[in-house]
Length: 114
Length: 114
Image 1 (cartoon, rainbow over the protein chains, first blue to last red):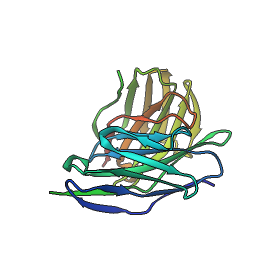
Image 2 (image 1 turned 90 degrees about the vertical axis):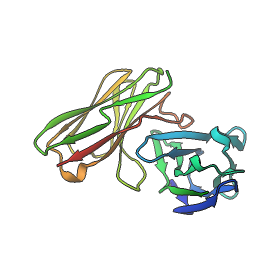
Image 3 (image 1 turned 135 degrees about the vertical axis):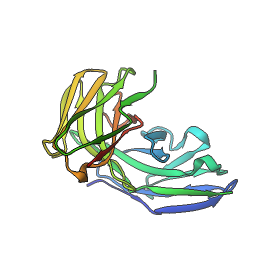
Protein backbone atom coordinates (compact mmCIF):
# COMPACT_ATOMS: atom_id res chain seq x y z
CA UNK A 1 0.00 0.00 0.00
CA UNK A 2 1.02 3.59 -0.55
CA UNK A 3 0.78 6.44 1.95
CA UNK A 4 2.06 9.95 2.53
CA UNK A 5 2.48 11.58 5.92
CA UNK A 6 3.15 15.28 6.31
CA UNK A 7 4.52 15.45 9.80
CA UNK A 8 3.36 18.98 10.66
CA UNK A 9 -0.10 20.40 10.04
CA UNK A 10 1.19 23.93 10.71
CA UNK A 11 4.66 25.50 10.53
CA UNK A 12 5.40 29.08 11.53
CA UNK A 13 8.64 30.88 10.63
CA UNK A 14 9.88 34.44 10.60
CA UNK A 15 10.63 36.16 7.33
CA UNK A 16 14.23 35.56 6.30
CA UNK A 17 14.63 32.32 8.31
CA UNK A 18 14.84 28.79 6.86
CA UNK A 19 11.79 26.73 6.01
CA UNK A 20 11.51 22.97 6.58
CA UNK A 21 8.33 21.08 5.67
CA UNK A 22 8.54 17.37 6.38
CA UNK A 23 7.11 14.53 4.31
CA UNK A 24 7.47 10.77 4.79
CA UNK A 25 6.11 8.21 2.38
CA UNK A 26 5.47 4.50 2.15
CA UNK A 27 5.31 2.67 -1.16
CA UNK A 28 5.57 -0.89 -2.47
CA UNK A 29 6.48 0.52 -5.89
CA UNK A 30 9.13 2.93 -7.09
CA UNK A 31 7.54 6.32 -6.44
CA UNK A 32 7.70 9.72 -7.98
CA UNK A 33 7.37 12.47 -5.40
CA UNK A 34 6.08 15.99 -5.78
CA UNK A 35 5.54 19.14 -3.76
CA UNK A 36 2.69 21.49 -4.64
CA UNK A 37 1.79 24.87 -3.17
CA UNK A 38 -1.71 26.28 -2.89
CA UNK A 39 -2.39 29.91 -2.06
CA UNK A 40 -5.86 30.77 -0.65
CA UNK A 41 -8.70 30.22 -3.12
CA UNK A 42 -6.27 29.19 -5.85
CA UNK A 43 -5.33 26.01 -7.64
CA UNK A 44 -2.21 24.02 -6.84
CA UNK A 45 1.14 24.86 -8.40
CA UNK A 46 3.94 22.34 -8.90
CA UNK A 47 7.06 23.36 -6.94
CA UNK A 48 9.33 20.43 -7.76
CA UNK A 49 9.43 16.71 -8.46
CA UNK A 50 11.62 13.66 -7.96
CA UNK A 51 11.35 10.87 -10.55
CA UNK A 52 14.40 8.63 -9.92
CA UNK A 53 17.18 10.83 -11.24
CA UNK A 54 19.13 13.21 -8.96
CA UNK A 55 18.06 12.86 -5.33
CA UNK A 56 18.48 16.59 -4.61
CA UNK A 57 15.83 18.41 -6.56
CA UNK A 58 15.63 22.16 -7.09
CA UNK A 59 12.32 23.82 -7.77
CA UNK A 60 10.79 27.20 -8.32
CA UNK A 61 10.97 30.16 -5.91
CA UNK A 62 14.13 28.88 -4.21
CA UNK A 63 12.65 25.64 -2.87
CA UNK A 64 14.46 22.34 -2.94
CA UNK A 65 13.89 18.82 -1.63
CA UNK A 66 16.02 15.75 -1.05
CA UNK A 67 14.80 12.22 -1.70
CA UNK A 68 16.17 9.90 1.01
CA UNK A 69 15.20 6.33 0.25
CA UNK A 70 16.68 4.92 3.47
CA UNK A 71 14.55 7.32 5.51
CA UNK A 72 11.57 7.26 3.12
CA UNK A 73 11.52 11.04 3.31
CA UNK A 74 11.16 13.93 0.87
CA UNK A 75 11.44 17.08 2.98
CA UNK A 76 10.98 20.52 1.42
CA UNK A 77 13.38 23.31 2.33
CA UNK A 78 14.05 26.94 1.53
CA UNK A 79 16.98 28.93 2.95
CA UNK A 80 15.07 32.16 3.55
CA UNK A 81 11.30 32.53 3.88
CA UNK A 82 9.43 35.33 2.16
CA UNK A 83 6.01 36.64 3.12
CA UNK A 84 4.68 35.40 -0.23
CA UNK A 85 5.57 31.80 0.77
CA UNK A 86 2.66 31.72 3.23
CA UNK A 87 0.37 29.04 1.79
CA UNK A 88 -0.67 25.38 2.02
CA UNK A 89 1.87 22.82 0.84
CA UNK A 90 1.05 19.29 -0.31
CA UNK A 91 3.45 16.37 -0.64
CA UNK A 92 2.27 13.90 -3.29
CA UNK A 93 3.31 10.37 -4.25
CA UNK A 94 2.61 8.86 -7.68
CA UNK A 95 3.18 5.19 -8.51
CA UNK A 96 2.47 2.90 -11.45
CA UNK A 97 0.65 -0.13 -10.14
CA UNK A 98 -0.47 -1.58 -13.42
CA UNK A 99 -2.85 1.34 -13.35
CA UNK A 100 -1.74 4.49 -11.59
CA UNK A 101 -2.15 5.85 -8.10
CA UNK A 102 -1.73 9.38 -6.77
CA UNK A 103 -1.76 9.99 -3.04
CA UNK A 104 -1.89 13.47 -1.48
CA UNK A 105 -0.58 14.24 1.97
CA UNK A 106 -2.91 16.07 4.34
CA UNK A 107 -1.08 19.35 3.79
CA UNK A 108 1.07 21.71 5.85
CA UNK A 109 0.04 25.31 6.37
CA UNK A 110 3.07 27.62 6.35
CA UNK A 111 2.78 30.90 8.24
CA UNK A 112 5.45 33.59 7.72
CA UNK A 113 5.78 36.31 10.35
CA UNK A 114 7.15 39.74 9.52
CA UNK B 1 0.32 28.20 -23.40
CA UNK B 2 1.11 26.58 -20.03
CA UNK B 3 -2.23 27.02 -18.32
CA UNK B 4 -5.34 25.11 -17.43
CA UNK B 5 -8.34 27.41 -17.69
CA UNK B 6 -11.48 26.73 -15.67
CA UNK B 7 -14.83 28.48 -16.03
CA UNK B 8 -16.76 29.75 -14.26
CA UNK B 9 -14.66 30.80 -11.27
CA UNK B 10 -17.70 30.91 -9.00
CA UNK B 11 -21.06 29.15 -9.29
CA UNK B 12 -24.11 29.20 -7.06
CA UNK B 13 -26.80 26.69 -7.96
CA UNK B 14 -30.01 25.34 -6.51
CA UNK B 15 -30.53 21.67 -5.82
CA UNK B 16 -32.81 21.31 -8.88
CA UNK B 17 -30.52 23.14 -11.31
CA UNK B 18 -28.36 21.71 -14.08
CA UNK B 19 -25.02 23.38 -14.67
CA UNK B 20 -21.65 22.56 -16.22
CA UNK B 21 -18.06 23.26 -15.32
CA UNK B 22 -15.56 23.69 -18.12
CA UNK B 23 -11.83 23.03 -18.27
CA UNK B 24 -9.49 23.71 -21.17
CA UNK B 25 -5.78 23.15 -21.82
CA UNK B 26 -3.64 23.61 -24.91
CA UNK B 27 -0.41 22.00 -23.73
CA UNK B 28 -1.01 18.75 -25.61
CA UNK B 29 -1.52 16.88 -22.34
CA UNK B 30 -3.28 13.55 -22.82
CA UNK B 31 -4.47 13.00 -19.26
CA UNK B 32 -7.06 15.21 -17.57
CA UNK B 33 -8.52 15.03 -14.08
CA UNK B 34 -11.35 16.36 -11.93
CA UNK B 35 -10.69 16.83 -8.24
CA UNK B 36 -12.95 18.00 -5.44
CA UNK B 37 -11.45 19.94 -2.55
CA UNK B 38 -13.21 20.77 0.71
CA UNK B 39 -11.88 23.49 3.00
CA UNK B 40 -8.60 22.66 4.76
CA UNK B 41 -8.40 19.24 3.04
CA UNK B 42 -6.29 17.85 0.20
CA UNK B 43 -7.90 17.38 -3.22
CA UNK B 44 -9.90 14.16 -3.71
CA UNK B 45 -9.83 12.47 -7.10
CA UNK B 46 -13.16 12.19 -8.91
CA UNK B 47 -12.46 11.27 -12.54
CA UNK B 48 -9.51 10.62 -14.84
CA UNK B 49 -9.49 10.78 -18.62
CA UNK B 50 -6.63 9.38 -20.65
CA UNK B 51 -6.57 9.96 -24.40
CA UNK B 52 -10.16 11.21 -24.16
CA UNK B 53 -11.43 7.97 -22.60
CA UNK B 54 -12.66 7.70 -19.03
CA UNK B 55 -9.97 5.81 -17.18
CA UNK B 56 -10.99 6.14 -13.55
CA UNK B 57 -14.26 6.96 -11.80
CA UNK B 58 -13.69 7.06 -8.06
CA UNK B 59 -17.23 5.92 -7.20
CA UNK B 60 -18.58 9.40 -7.72
CA UNK B 61 -22.40 9.82 -7.45
CA UNK B 62 -24.22 9.92 -10.78
CA UNK B 63 -25.29 13.52 -10.17
CA UNK B 64 -21.75 14.33 -11.41
CA UNK B 65 -21.26 13.44 -15.08
CA UNK B 66 -17.91 14.02 -16.81
CA UNK B 67 -17.38 14.52 -20.51
CA UNK B 68 -14.26 14.85 -22.64
CA UNK B 69 -15.33 16.17 -26.08
CA UNK B 70 -11.74 16.44 -27.35
CA UNK B 71 -8.15 16.32 -26.17
CA UNK B 72 -8.21 19.94 -24.96
CA UNK B 73 -11.55 20.12 -23.23
CA UNK B 74 -13.06 18.54 -20.13
CA UNK B 75 -16.53 19.21 -18.77
CA UNK B 76 -18.26 18.28 -15.55
CA UNK B 77 -22.05 18.27 -15.75
CA UNK B 78 -23.90 18.83 -12.50
CA UNK B 79 -27.50 17.89 -11.74
CA UNK B 80 -29.55 17.63 -8.55
CA UNK B 81 -26.62 18.40 -6.30
CA UNK B 82 -26.75 18.45 -2.52
CA UNK B 83 -25.44 21.19 -0.19
CA UNK B 84 -22.60 18.88 0.85
CA UNK B 85 -21.35 19.02 -2.75
CA UNK B 86 -20.31 22.62 -2.15
CA UNK B 87 -16.54 22.71 -2.64
CA UNK B 88 -13.70 23.90 -4.85
CA UNK B 89 -13.63 21.82 -8.04
CA UNK B 90 -10.20 21.59 -9.58
CA UNK B 91 -9.28 20.47 -13.06
CA UNK B 92 -5.75 19.26 -13.75
CA UNK B 93 -3.81 17.86 -16.68
CA UNK B 94 -0.57 15.95 -17.19
CA UNK B 95 1.40 14.79 -20.23
CA UNK B 96 0.22 11.22 -19.57
CA UNK B 97 -0.82 8.98 -16.70
CA UNK B 98 2.69 7.75 -15.97
CA UNK B 99 4.04 8.50 -12.51
CA UNK B 100 6.83 10.81 -13.61
CA UNK B 101 4.49 13.52 -14.83
CA UNK B 102 3.34 16.27 -12.53
CA UNK B 103 0.02 18.00 -12.75
CA UNK B 104 -0.86 21.44 -14.03
CA UNK B 105 -3.90 22.64 -12.10
CA UNK B 106 -6.49 25.22 -12.99
CA UNK B 107 -7.56 27.85 -10.47
CA UNK B 108 -10.77 25.99 -9.75
CA UNK B 109 -14.49 26.64 -9.65
CA UNK B 110 -15.90 27.56 -6.25
CA UNK B 111 -19.31 25.82 -6.19
CA UNK B 112 -22.02 26.64 -3.68
CA UNK B 113 -25.20 24.53 -3.64
CA UNK B 114 -28.17 26.21 -1.97
